[in-house]
Length: 383
Image (cartoon, rainbow, N blue to C red; front, side, top):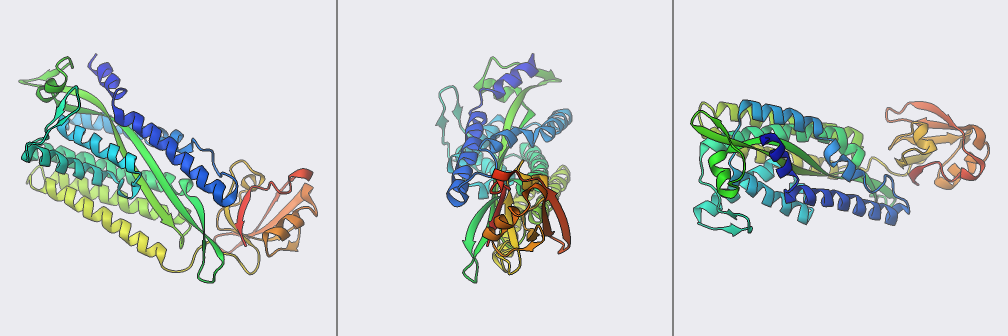
């Protein structure tokens, strides 16, 4: 019964529905931008909505079992503050500040500020008053933050490159070049333990689990965090695994410091501060790295460079990738998009492409292009 009510509480949390709406809007504005630049959308508009829960469900299950099993107890006031901060993030779409370590630390600060200044925020059913600064709840918050930052890094590694949407810019030589913008939102529904005496203030009907002389309750809470990245010097497929590895390593560091805080409690604050500083340092490092140097996807003197490949298209079935260069079509050397499609018509039934891959090695690809589909190869190119 406790578990069923905890799950039911998840579906009345406004963070869930705002996250669903925010994911839909992410897809809508991405498609709108792609249609304005390329006159076609690359992946369908509900992709971000679909991946909102799909990418993180395994971590949600693991963390629910782990946090509840270990007995990491967090105050309800911190969760309320976290919900407020998460809603602000999604309302502003400022996903550069979407890392969970920023949200968790901001929620700690918000809770403390409200309590220290005797501020209140009336939500009708309950009033948010904040919570006093205490290491007893900061240590679980630090451990949970480290775990979610670790998961954040893994999801950046797995999904950020796939989500990267191309944008056209002018290179240093005044030619068209492509950069890629990746903007994602993830939601992890995680089962948490909160003090029963605290939740009783907000929801006296909520069931409690007595352990010894203390009572606890379960809450299924929607943890939300976002990501924003821009790549121009490095192809997304190579950049975001590096970003993800750095973020995951930071998450492990936060967890380690949080565990040591069990021996010396002030380290709980250090864990959060290190996490914030470390995440800012990671962002600055990769932003500066991508701003310097030449674009990875620019017009070539010999061949046509691929900006993107439409899913399910003949180009996708041939295994063509972003950043590869098509040198010849049906044995004919090409130098621009017009020559590419003219060469396809020479023998569309057995269209053969000579492609220079990311390792500068030549490989051959072949696919049937129907007579009236020679302009539907599924490629976006720069020339």
